[in-house]
Amino acid sequence: MVDVENSDAHAKMFEAAVASSIIQIYLNGFVVGQSTSDVTMLIQTNGNPSAILNMSFTTAKSLAIELDKVIKNFEKITGHSLLTMEDITTKMVAAKGGATNVAL
Image 1 (tube, rainbow, N blue to C red):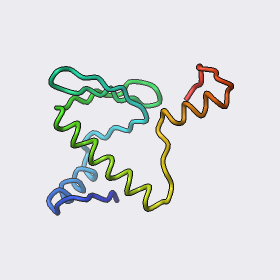
Image 2: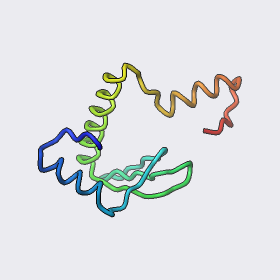
Image 3: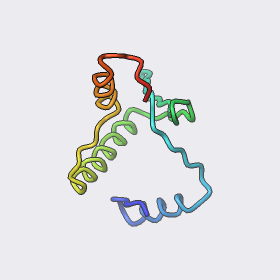
Image 4: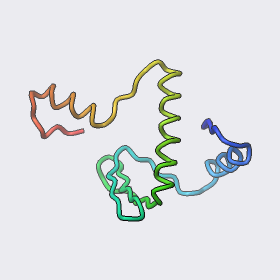
């Protein structure tokens, strides 16, 4: 079960959505773009585009704050600081002697 730090109503809605046949998308990569009014995220799965997510700047900022809370909580509980994709790429490039064609 997923831990939802919100009101009971949000928790119940979240649980029902996870148990339903609603579309679920897994991502392990992304590209973010912006216009003057919105943020667009190209969602990638194993390097391939799999969906596009559009949101307002207010929603994007709120999402970023909530994701930051979840990640900090995970790192606190596990005692492990997660690496970003950029951190991992830097380490892999360094391990390959500076080669920039490192496959992730």
